[in-house]
Image (cartoon, rainbow over all chains, first blue to last red; front, side, top):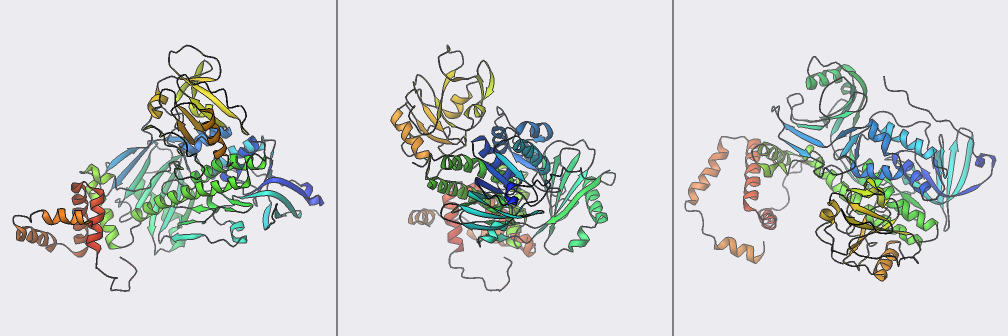
Length: 543
Length: 79
């Protein structure tokens, strides 16, 4: 039986007594994306109300693979620890082809072992949501309203009006901004009449989550044309609580009800795992998938994030992970706009940056899908050619596409990136997210990303004395990087304990690197120049 | 193809025994059904592309091969 899920009670709100209220930000949808937004904005001093039409967190088969960058963001929000404790850590993927019991090849998704977080953890979405709800409930500026369905949205020049339906009646709230995190079937998207353009793929997949005691490695296993499912593909993931995610390709012409018959699923699972396998079927469903996205995510005062803005196939784990990165990108900007530091036009950079990222995710997802579900004889021939060459020819393995797993976008073409930086060294390009590194800080072991936190940070190498940044509209933390063994100096600093920052960033002797509040690199300079740094900060906040 | 790419290819002498290689290509397909032929060609293309070692040229050759084929003649939706 599925674990009993916590139900959340409906609480009467002042609006039901006809006290009309105005909030800085209303969030529609208490999924991972909406909850993360409430937490992030709360940490930045912005009051939010989250509306969800349900009274409990999701059940069944939803997102399970949470990528390293997502975990880093969750860590910034303060909820990575329970996820790491509960989740199944994995870094390795294996691809099998045909009758061969040995993988055609394996890939390591975390070649850099000096990282705080693994390439992925597998964790049922209901756990992620529960941990996020716990965090949001401890966030004084965030208010969760269950059983509250958005029924209408009306935009004005200076606010947005949101009509809400509850078991005890309806009410209207006003907000400066509405974040539509209401999922793939977003009703707000429909209310605004927005075109959700894209492609539907003609294939069905069966999800079977089974409970089974088994000693198997924590790895992603993917089969093309295995003996237990000729001509199709299959995927296996380990989840916590002895739960295993099986994902079977079925093809386009199927009898849906027949395929969902538990006896038939059991037979299918036994063909895969062996007649002796002992398991319970916990959840099954059949899905088809689509690759779609909105042309723009910001529509005046309504901002789309997550599945409401972009939909991808599950191969590559780019759905929920992409959604959390939307929030990472949006919330610091929205907070600056709300606090009057930045003009509302700063939000157009959320559009530019996350539309580009979504296009990248969509492209990868579409290509994976074309490999997994070839559209016709010629594409199938190329797919099979790649797979049959992969064992003997290393070059062919590069073409094998069982899903290009989620990597954070480098916002290289963003209009928000300062243009007057120096040419970066081979290390990190402006627009890329910072790469974590073990450091020593305050006399103990630490990690770079924890020090970058959620504010602008200037990392300074060498003898730079960057104490002349005082008069900026946003705080900029200046952090001096010292090589191991150098004498202490006054002011905030960190020690490049294993020399990884020097290797990763290849900084000039007196280099300065400006990181944004979402930990993406804004600009690099070979020397400190207060004027250039200040103007880059101003560019980065849209002024 | 660029003029340079075209000139480079034209400047290379043909195989010493063009009839022999042509015959080998045809014979390799003769004992195969259509599906297997597609697979053979796909494998050959991937091997040749790798041996070429030049992405830009690979794209140019793909465009050259696809040139003047015109639209598909059947009305089916599968490729």
